[in-house]
Length: 346
Image 1 (tube, rainbow, N blue to C red):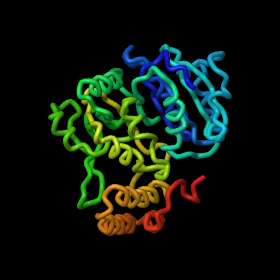
Image 2: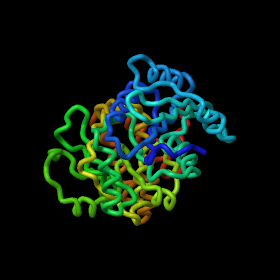
Image 3: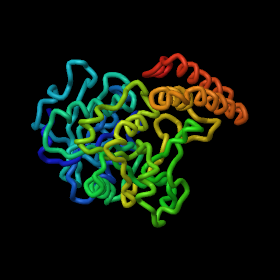
Image 4: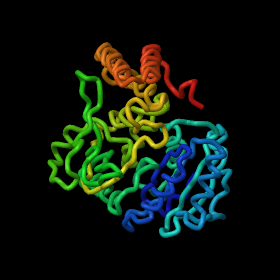
């Protein structure tokens, strides 16, 4: 059990050998408005070496954190299942907020890394919601306050942010998330390319929302207790879409003033040029699209397979035969119903 008395929101982050991103993210979180109070819960999926490196960087003279001790025995946070092998407690230097840092005993994927902390939080009282945040994001000071305000005012169970590129804050990457295109069996970003400061039709955007983008998802406790944990069968990609589909009956919302700059793809290579994308990102995008369609839009599965094949062929036009093979392998895995961590990924 975690003592939740000092905080109202739990900020959940999954990292994978990207300590510089986590350091920058925590530095931004230290600048958030005083309310709501929060603690940060990080799962490092990259192994003991990455965990030690992250700890050392965060408590270095230029790091965002300082070590603390004596609140709880670390063993109390390590479950018999062995999914966490080590836990450290730190605190932000410039903020009254603790940082709980856990080392996953193996790569649990994005959903598994979040569930490690969700399981513990659900047994604790006092907190109002969780904020799932990508490690390569640097939220603006009012980002969290705007999310919680919209959840209360709009009676929304899950709320998304205005996500912008870290390279150019003037243009929108997405407003809260995506709408689902049935006849394309794919997700489409809402607001892509719009000016960040442009006025918006909030009711129209929320009416279009099918999925909150996983880079910034605020989930109320009441909603979380109804929809449960993330589905670890996805490992990476579409777990946020599936979670959102389950939350939709409890209200999906958008907080325009919650600005979250995001680099994107820094851990798995999904933000690179098309021909240079990582095998893992291409494989999982193809496999999990079929898995998602089968779960939520099963009548459209043949259409999803058709577009998946067309998508794979585009890599040949991009002169990337290796990613064509990765996409084809992902499609075959999706047809067979394979889930979880790919065998080729450690």
